[in-house]
Image 1: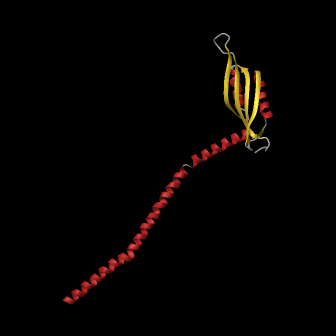
Image 2: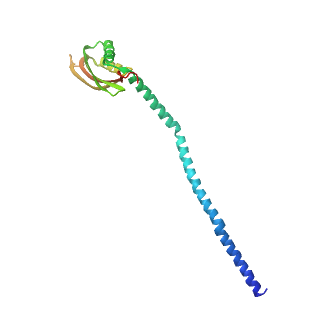
Image 3: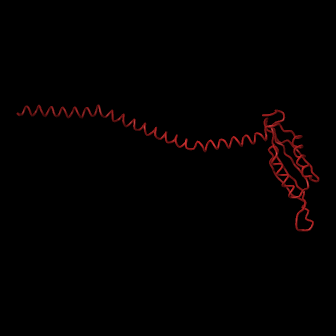
Amino acid sequence: MNRTHWIVAGALALGLVLALVGGMRFAVKPVRSRIEDQLAVKQDLEAKLQKARDTAAQFDKFKAQAENVRRDLDFYSARIDEPLTSVGVQKMLQTIENQYNFRECTYDIKALTSDGSVTTYEVDIKFKSDFEHLGLFLDSCLGQKRLVVLDGFTLTELDDTDGAYVDTMKVELKLLVYGGDSKKGKS
C-alpha cells in the first residue's frame, strides 16, 4: 500500500471514529438521559407505594380507633340527646333518694347553660348518710341514662359516737346533669 491509501484509510478510520462518537453523543446520550429520568420516576413511585403499604398496614388500627370513637359518640349522645328539664332532674334524683331513704335531703337545681343543643343543670344536694349509702347513691347517679358528673363534695358533721367509726355524716354534693335542650326537642 502506498501513502495515499494510508491517508485514505486513516481518514476513513477517523471519520468512522467521529461518526461513532457523534452517534453516541446524539443517539445514545438522549436515550441515557431518558433512562435516568425514568429511573427517578420509578424511585418516586416506589416511595409512594411504600408509603401506601405502610398506611394500609395500619388500616386495622385506624378502623378500630374509628369504631371506639363511634361507640363513645353513641354512648354520650344517648345520654344527652333527650330533652332535659329541671323537673326531670328532680324526679331522677328523688327516685335515687327514695331508694336509699336519706335524712334531711334538700336540692337546689339551677340551669347553667343552654347552647341550643345541650342543657346543663347544676345540682346542689345536701343530706345525711353513711358511707355505704353515699357510695351507692354516687354509683346510682353515675349509672343513670343521663350524663351525670360529680363536680364537688363535702363531708361535714361526722357522727363519731364511740370514737372508733363514723356512722353518719352530712353530705353536700355538686352534680352537673346534661341533657338535650328542652326548647329544641330531640337533637
